[in-house]
Length: 264
Image (cartoon, rainbow, N blue to C red):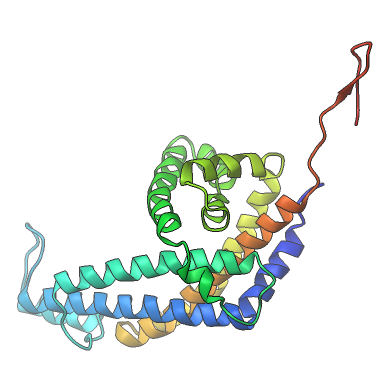
């Protein structure tokens, strides 16, 4: 029985616009917006001091141009502070992703259960961090070899994060289970991924128009689209996972006494 792409997409959208989906998007929005604004502050700090990579000519006119393109950040922030904020934002995003997946595989649509974000997050968080690096390297190597292997690995290993967050598995076992879960469904999962990407591009484009303005205003608006697409992607991934695990397992062929294989 094949996975139903339309049903998964509808559930992903419904979970995104549900009360807890919007709450999660709001929290992600705050985290990503603060991180982005701090990034602008770091750029302003660099521009104010004329710090450029070796070999890049610098002039006061260039300094003014960079400040204009950044939309004049609210304040200058030292890179060390920016690095700390970026690290904290990354850790917060991991915890939020783990809690989101746990919430989206449940029937809860009104609230964000605190236990999903606070209980047993250290071990899954470490596996999430290391697994993301390994997953990225594996898929990148696949794309080096004529793209198709990269797409195949991206689809086959797509559910490893769900196994880490929901099943409390380490990232190696999670990738193995994702490989088995997607077997026989990879073409339709690829089509589902394309549909999710199209939706994400459209939403990002709508809010990304503000990026033309640049600076803080552009960041504040564009991050709305980023938060919504992140929640939608997680919700759709969880919906696809639920549908796959609910599919009846294929029974092995039964052999008769004469050794002839028959269907179960």
